Length: 419
Image 1 (tube, rainbow, N blue to C red):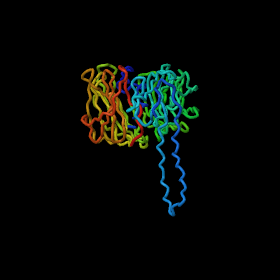
Image 2: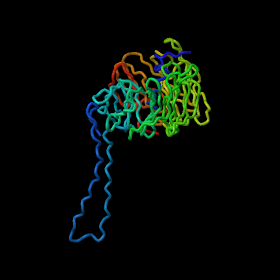
Image 3: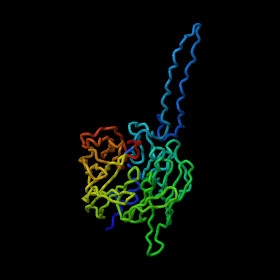
């Protein structure tokens, strides 16, 4: 059955928008000038405190006391556009630091190409990538500002993901005729092409499928095969070597959404049906694929609804996901389940009025704590912690509130690494 493009993001089935938005985020993870000001230079580390020399006396002690060690003062966090020690929340084109409202980055300020969609952040918080208003890739070094990457100028990014160490970015670009999966070294800015091909069929019996990065894991770059400019779902999963571009076929069947475990050893896959009619009933099913053996296990049997967001815990033991029963439903649930399909739990959220908080996004603070992002129609944003040991709404603990932008999406785009 054909899948309508306009419902792809809402149903977590839109091929390009789903993957670009997911690249973000998987996922649970000093004072600076305002974002509109030029970035401040890096603050030097604090100097060690000098120990004054002892004053001589006429009768020095026979056994002078041992010198007392003076501890070194802690090194402050380097000044950056956003602090890497705090979680970041994006509301439209502005990114806020959780618990530090003065630290925010407006992706429309002078010097920053205007944000359009798809924020991805390096695991160490060193870089931010997004698609700008000209449908080109913008990469921000959070310590110095925007990087210029002339090799990708004029090309449209189809998907991207940072390396686990934050030093490189895997991205697929298209120039209107061809696609190229490339690795960009963020220090030297050198670019290597791993795979490339035609965007459109060269003959009647060929099906041109481009490789779009989903996640860069220690096992390699997880990518999905997509048919560009089509409403067809992704047609398979591939593991690409970031060294030589060699590929390992993981799965050939179509899927709606996929998320790799932190070590890349397992992949959560959403399948089901997303009919094109607005009032039609979508269906969902979640499986876990063993990347080395190829075995699949259904952990959430097929049922009505669609998965909005899917996140692995940092230790790879559990999955956190949000779901709605229909495309236009104001109600959403957050579910927690172990990777083997056991111990499933669920809590429900709904919007009953303009001031009531509704579910927007979720992430992991660490392997024992989920982060739940709520917002209302007036763009009041609440970030809550939810312990997995007490998975119910009574256990929600408010961490911070923000005033976001109305009529935009609100997302958790970065969480400091935690286990």
